[in-house]
Image 1 (cartoon, rainbow, N blue to C red):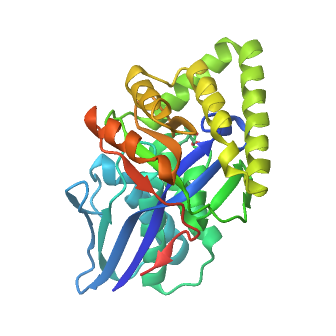
Image 2: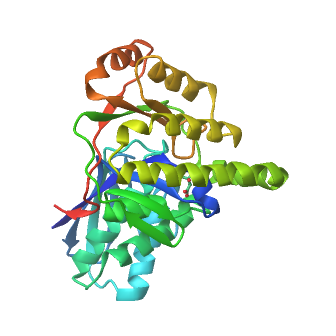
Length: 315
Ligand code: MEV
């Protein structure tokens, strides 16, 4: 049996702007999608998703929509390497679905890794990343590639289409990332298209917003590289303002953001596509309890996530 795990992500700065070739900063975090593959005596290729409670035979013409990305990966790998043995793939994940934590990318990365290892072929992380990107295109339409990249390579990454740089720094022990899921699910591909259409309607204004996002991300990169994590708070809030202006912030996420800010966050913003999904806040560890208490009081389940240095790993 071959098992692997690939991490979720939190986009610290620059989502959406990254779709139009601006930079973004993302970190892998300690929630995982896992895939275990065992050989079958029959020639069947079975997929079981515990989290989605779905099961399918990939060779059938139609597979449930939520599992289509795995069929796509299977076909790409079959074309390239030839899959001659039957298998059963068991996929599980503790990453919330459709909420901005890169659940689809992490499952794609983990499934790709396990399947290539199961076949015993030689591959590089770059192959995993490229195949998972193809699956992301199927799910999200016009993805920037940031989600599959961070889940493959891990760490804190400064990312631009066609360029990635691992920021070689240690996350400070006394700094916490708190994530709250608004519980509102949305379709990333649709939100991305809406933002791109708004861009086209107001190009002369939007290009300044996109340029500001680029400057903001570059400033954040410099602060991170010089270990000045504690000075990121205002940039997080400015980034949130830019997300508001491109139309992805809604009342429910604003409520969480203000609850965090009013209870000690250095900064808080939407992370991922927005219009629901998750919010993250940056906190000094000794200043966490009040916010956690408040968030629970107003009905949310805050989770403290830790940045992780490794991307996909074999278990
Ligand atoms: C998705 O996690 C983040 C977006 O920037 C889309 C993308 O980069 O593909 C909204």
